[in-house]
Length: 205
Image (cartoon, rainbow, N blue to C red; front, side):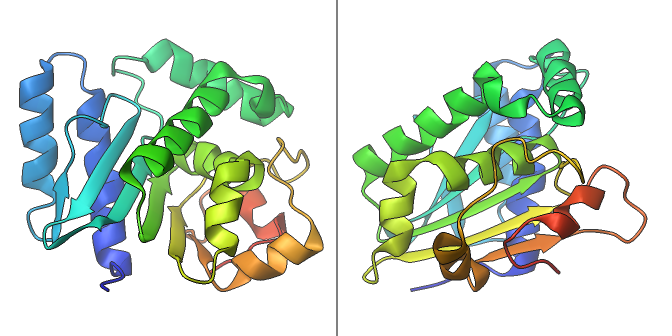
């Protein structure tokens, strides 16, 4: 079963921003997002995709699923809320934000209804923060990750995280060891927003 490359994961993370466009209707946003990932082997699932989360399925195996949580888009449909979430990360209150909880519940719904054999998660900036929150707090996702018959991988790109506040993404040592070979955090050296990613338990690159 194909595991998407880092390049393709980054492509899908970037494409999720198109679903957050404020000036376009959903049909146009869905098409723009699909067009942006045509160089991958994944196609957008319109039923489960919205302005916050984009869901992709492998074109030859729909049980191979990618979830991308959109990052901050100030001029988007949820621009004001994105700013509020960024401020919550900066003050250590992110885990109390409805966006974090809603995206976790959406992931649970996707897992229950699509019942994937392989799940990959990829996100940028604020999306990475909600993704890490979901990995740390969703019992349904934890069960999937711990299932040796399932395939899981996750990548973040310049993920938002405070170097001092945990923002409810801290995990225990046992679960952390399980995630070590499954989760990668990619950041550019001088990116301030993702500076805190160096302090979390998952593997970092």
